[in-house]
Length: 169
Image 1: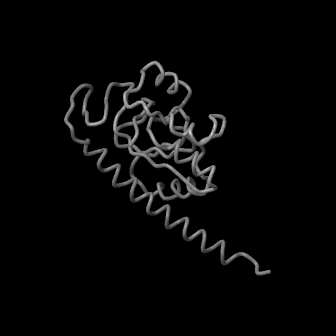
Image 2: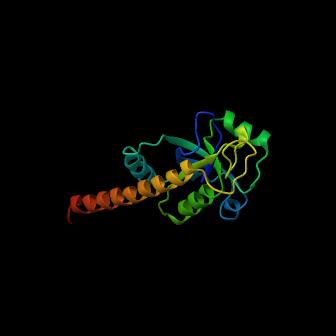
Image 3: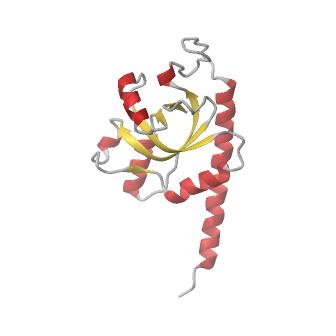
């Protein structure tokens, strides 16, 4: 899941990451900060293609990966002003390791709150802690899973098509 950093992104929306800001500590153990944390183009294209069938609002762009569970509002506002869509904890590490190991990776995230508006995970309104995920979040998690599975099928089909199209030597 992810916390929105833009006011136009609502709980239950879905974010597909193009790349991640490396504001975490873990990815630094694998590569210097200058090494970009970027999603694989083909994986991302498949996610976006699969998401076209969704009735949910889909957002595509940068995410902030931070290992601070409780973010600093001043810092989050800075990233929001720079156009970063949301904050989460894993994409930068996944993208960094995938880049180093020459693997393909993508990231699809269900929005579960907006820390800048004071609405956190398990809250329907600011400060109203329920301990449960909002139905919109649960539905978004189911939908992002459906999209991810469909994207895998698209990638598999594209791979088969590319294999058949290769001329023999």
